Image (tube, rainbow, N blue to C red; front, side):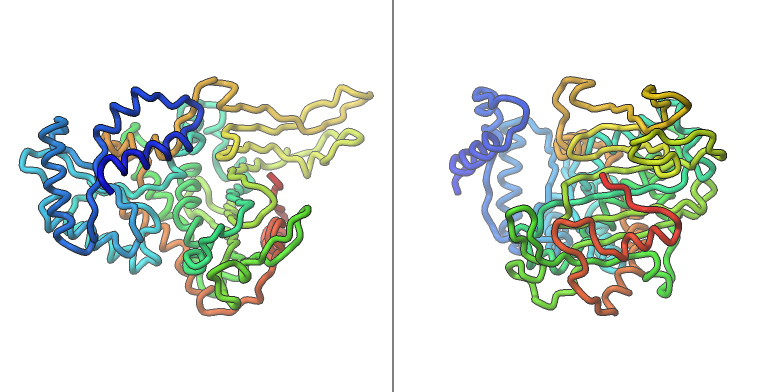
Length: 452
């Protein structure tokens, strides 16, 4: 494509996908002058030579000062070789001292060994401070707000420990299937695709200690420390601490939904996990003994991602539940729910006296905070936030090398066990909340999954 053809293609996309604000023609025309297109084979050094010529021209004509942010939106197997080519072409440094940074998408490796090797190869070209491993979940407003919620207030932080919290549930449910990406997803699976990166990073943000000051290294130090504190499962513990699932065909409403093995490009005997649930424990003084239940799955009843923090019951039940209340006080605990998507916000559920009828009868009520109604302004998307941070050199919301390796270490025993064993799939219907074994995993500790 020519520059003009590519700019027009971008215009169509922006007009189609822009959210919560009108398309500004004048603003676009000004912005589009900075869009250029260089075609080439990313394995060919000539491609990077052409890119260098274009960047030198942009620096001269548009006054960039030589600053460049490379975003590797490529197949993961090319990450290391692209960075090495960037280095070989002299694009990783600038003679005038301008910054050169690289944003790398997930997955960062497919296991611990490959993640270490990828880190090793990239580190021969770039310093760690210039590598931005992007995880869009960390850019979501509610995930960021966890830090403000915990460390900017004194209400909940004194209760944020094993003395007051029974357990924590992290749910990332998707109502869709693999949407034509069956061949890719067959090699990934839910554990690798969601838990190893997104959900362990979210869990670390919820459970980390307070940093000494709000600085990218200080925040990431605490998140890394938490990830290193996750108990590593022994092989014989995996079956009781982790559940692997795969959805089968079902009729939901008036629609017949395919099972994973019937999706295009999928092996009819695939052992891929489209559902994964894991019980993690954090071996430190704050969280020792508190189970963290993390689950994710495709073809579930609804699209929702949230964190539910379940507080302990009152030491003595003085009151009874009101007639018609959906739950008894025991089954309706104090819950703090951090909603990540689709409706970002925070909800607190507690017991209140029911004013109808006589006597001291309790029923659960909720206090809700919603971003849209509270602030009334457009919330930036996760990628907007993260890309702006990368341009500004703020790596607070990006994962560091030691964090990536710690999260791979936490899931490695599960991953190995699942690879070595064959499972009787499918074991949950499309449109359901997952395999029965997942419910049984919580029931063994006297808990049950909350229905979002």
